[in-house]
Length: 201
Image (cartoon, rainbow, N blue to C red; front, side):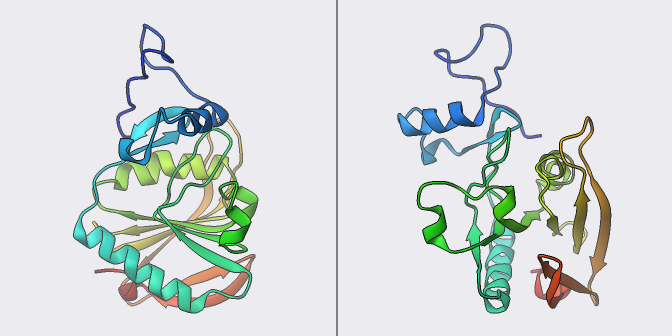
């Protein structure tokens, strides 16, 4: 996991790091203790710095955004680098496909029941996306998680989440390479098959 932030003295403990609940995290945002300029997200109770993005990473997000928006069936929407609320975390995945539209999330972020797919675009964050983010999404029972892996030029699809067990994990991983098509499924229905090369820079 990326390096946790040392807690603010007012809220932290003297020895080591302190974990925060999702409601505590929301309260810190509400009262202005945390702002977008702090560049943090809550992962497993820790405030964690988000790493800076590079042009290939952002280019792939835009490509995946354009592709997905053309394919989305009625009743689904796409969110870019926006928060999702889980039991002990509030990550900001690069892309989340969620039920409804922006009017559904005027007063809250999407939760696992709202989410059909989360996507992380990975280069310098690959180890964390395969490890920490995968564990977090599996614990939350996110039904499908993609890693668009820029290092190995492949798309990794994770399904069959374990839920909140001792060692959360996805039960199935399938890797797609250039020349393959990635099945884009929502609610178990195949929406389209996306060529891997269309998702890579």
